Image (cartoon, rainbow, N blue to C red; front, side, top):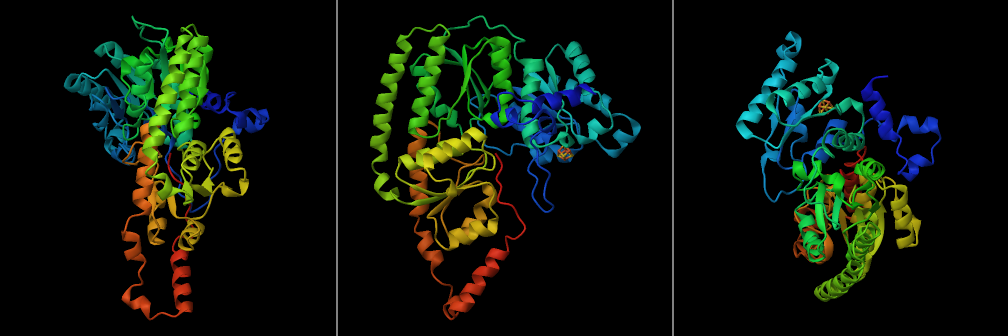
Length: 488
Ligand code: SF4
């Protein structure tokens, strides 16, 4: 069995994942990917998943060893933000042609591209991504990266997650393995401290981690590495010296969190920064883990004081929105955003959840949602766009929160919609993020445009009730055969 096949099997065997633990050994080997239904949209490939996890490391040059389309498909499709370097957003690809492949020039071209990037940009490191074509023609990117690293005296990291290996989620996990094999632990920091933590699976979408970091700063808690959002290569390379870790997106990097605990004794917990109580809970858990690992116990008191102060301030700011949002019904189709904490945060401000997708939630997440909602009828594994459209056009919800792929369902039903997935333009993390979320929902629901677009068009005024019903059924059937999934 090839080392790469072993790596993939290892990624599927995840003892920290409850769903995986409950399977028998044979089922575990098959992994979690479900075969696609013909006509369903597939989401990203493994290469895309690996790139999503690694690209936000901002001072690294990300070189895609492939024909041009792979980079075109995956470049910068999320709103991760950087507080410094912009190199990560520069698109590098070997842009292989048929001639390169037929003539066997591709490895040489890769080596040359690494040299050009090093000379022109002097990056902290270069990550080289294998893709379907370069893996199928048998390019040995490990050997090329090793040779280039020696020759140019710079870390050159092979990312072996070609698209055909599996799903986007597998790619996320393989990216975690790449960091474990080639990056984390390669640099010893000269300033390790008792208050150092890692945040794993936080992508800093729309810069939302910057709403949380000031809270940690006030507690003298240092983020040694936030992986991957707004990360620097050296921070990731020295992440093994953190005392504790918080895992934000469990489906993406659970293997990284578990293996860092095994290798470097870094305890971790799974938490969320969405919502007031979830943020407070996360801060408390971070403080508890640090104290467990040797920090002074007064950190617990300082954390409690900060939580009380910040909660009070946030509730005060929310006062203006609560009467306007109280009792409004929300339909959630959140993809990978932590659905349980979004559910909890919306209920905190008095909104009612009429339905939430749990397709990409872990078993633990689903259990949490059931407990919060106290009714599992509002959970759905997958819902056809036609049904979403019907729910919205029949006004069973006042707003839909989802990702960009499903926005047109809401807009066609003439109902308010708010982007809550990776392309969102507002930051919703922490206490200030919760206030921002309430503000954006308020703006969306009370936008005067809805009254105008719901007015019947001149040609509709003469329609009979039967004709209107027929028109609505025809609109719903436009969505037939699609899936309502959203990226995460
Ligand atoms: S790696 Fe393969 S599946 Fe992914 S974009 Fe490239 S060709 Fe397509």
